[in-house]
Length: 337
Image (cartoon, rainbow, N blue to C red; front, side):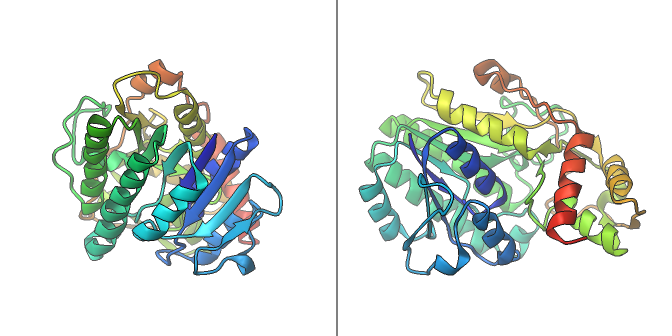
């Protein structure tokens, strides 16, 4: 297979690239390397796949990996339709995995236009390119945020998701709807994956695990929203990657052409318990500032992954304790702590 991975400098994208290469696939990665968070982390992720920061240019030129001849990277923004069309025309991809998006629930309240451009305009650009280039399978990142303030748990793919509580969630729901339409109209096989609170090495610095680890290690205050009365279905990155790879290689089995799956750990953890595990592994107590619920946030996330298990035998194996230890070990190494 020849696979395009968008968002290849991102948390999930960089891990996925490495997993696909290990299986012998030819991979092309693209990313706009925006400054939503520290770009040095993005460049460091690329470096570990053999993509040198010094060789990346702003004109979309390819950089060949120094450690794997089957991997090339280019700095491309998915909102640039002309460049995408040229990329698809000359590369002859068989599969596309879209992990490029403007991330962050809370930031979507502050900067809505960034989400519309990346998560809707850029997403439609990819659908159009897939449609016109006979892509065998389009896999894309959705999010558990589409469930909004649902109180029925665990969250099932059969639940209504018509009440998003953030613009980010609304864009992800729109992605699912557009994918269904393209599958219906153009026989484009599509699979959406609703990720549940992914964490692990090389994670995003705007997410709770990194925020907590950084603040606790420095003796700074952490903000605990909804006074700590929250549960999250923390899912270790290796389990997420295993699920994505299986979806790419196993699906689509047959019609129907459009699918959406939850992909999570199915074991929600109290936020305060998660903080305690972090404290234990950092050997420091957290200084906590209890805060009210933030706009756009939800009290609980909890994935029903029965559908994904039936179709691809998805079964996450990492315990929270194991995952946090691996994350903290990486965090200390990366930050020279």
